Length: 178
Image 1 (cartoon, one colour):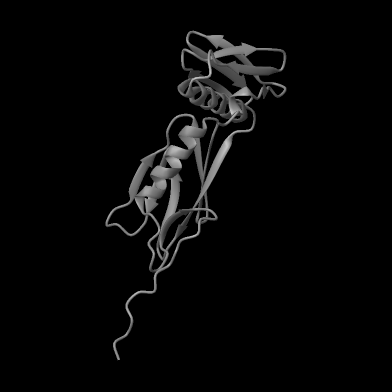
Image 2: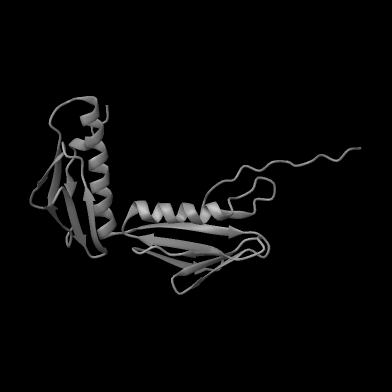
């Protein structure tokens, strides 16, 4: 069993946490995040650190303990450093541009695909690279996945939208009959 939940979470300078309602509020230089935690997980806010405690050693309690600790760690990292994902647009005539708070993708369809950028997330376009940034890891990852879903990379020519550094397995295609 993982013992991730037992580790303390260090609060960097400028980051504060407080219990509110049934959850935890974390505030830092990059914003404010709130997460509702499972009711059986208790949070101790100490001097410069957070500890999450579980009531017993049942399998479900251990699983929720690790989950809650990972969520809180992502909140602390998000409000202090932030998260980002980069996507690459590959293909002849494929391009992306940002107009206000809308991302326009021209990726081989008969019409451009217009995607509104969600609140709490910022997007920027530089050449063929799209950068998605924000303090909430789940929102950043979800929006990046939605962008990629518009035109996933295809296996024959490799055209489409992929994460930066993603390897696409290529297929050979038809062999000439001869």
